[in-house]
Length: 322
Length: 251
Image (cartoon, rainbow over all chains, first blue to last red; front, side, top):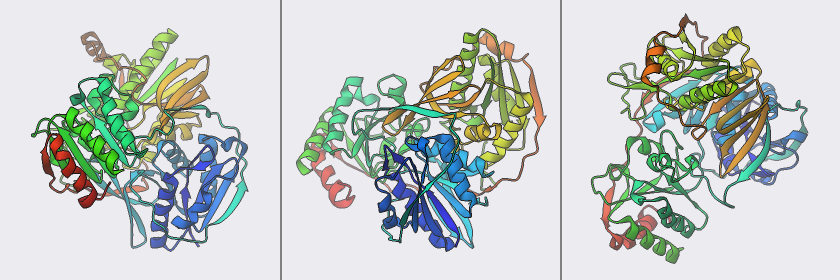
């Protein structure tokens, strides 16, 4: 039986949500190819959440352990996954998360093949694996055929909605021997406790120049809090360039590409640069004083007017209904 | 300090993308091309490192068509010392093919103290050539560096990860890919632009390997269905919330 590897991701010994998305994507490919899904977890010991992967379609869950695997170890992870892949995998599926963007190219290079990065859809036709990749920041979609043996791809977070598809998912642990890496993670400086990244949050509320000054982002943060830990605050390029918000929050072609369930653009006119980064959001709401702003062209629901009145009213309404 | 900076010519981020006659690539008629913005950070970082070291060489390497010479000249105008164009008909869809060609050139022209790339190109969103070159050269690699210190031969770099900053260390020589935040790229001054015309630029035709990623088609993204203006001002909020709950079902 051929194998599709799903490379999962843990932080501090707990699997991250994107792992269930990777297993879901791998399951879709495996079903079309008549293959099995092997979920790979790289950690220094058992990772919490590994037993959940069977539910998303993992035929088996293998934790590759090494002493240096407590944190992300780029070289060791890449070597361990590549060696596992050489044992007969036809496809290697990673996440296009911060870690996956670093890891997947290394794995592909070790396997001597290319990587279809940041994929938003996969399909198999006549045994050939194909993928859709947004390019030009989502202004166009490339359909590519992957002919690598194995094929390596990374999946854009938040796109492959985890689907329950229970399989056996037997857990096992394999100790691997990897040399000490030259690249080591010294520290992870966490942002505000529980803060979500705009690329991963199910709800993103972004602000632009219409906020007038940095302190006014407080009203967006209040709205985010009203959503009870499900929302992150993003920003347009203009306000990041002005130093109002960190680059980590920037949505757009030279920032992050996001696909949340709900995107709320506040005081953002909607430059093509910005639209590119958020147009794949499931539902878009725009609040802007200019009824002709381009953001209203992509918004499902628009409210025209003073954001300093509208946003607090929305926050109050969300709080009441939460 | 001998530093290689690998750069790419890309369509400007304001470009309205239209598919060309082949159905697989950008129609570049009327498109403005620029030095990939993430590569500007790499060029700037190389120049600052060389200035700090007081000696060294910054060599710019690009793979692409003849027009990429113009992009190399932009980096030379910023202050890089010389350029190498690995001339091919087009940049391949498979990043590993590009990485092989660049790694071969860097092997021949090395050793390097530092090899820099932008974290990704804003056209193909591949973000893979840098770390692949590192693998091929067997050098340590840190990607998406938003803050960098180098003390002696120890690199300490910040990388943005979801909701946190990862602080990573590795020894030189190394391959680093740069993210916004690492520096403020300089604009080429007129003097630099004039000087760049006289700087050496080697054009080397390359034969590319066949890749494992084949582009079948390039299409516009599905259009979003026509939205609507719910209303004006705070008075529209109750209706907005109702629509989000009952119609969009996202609340």
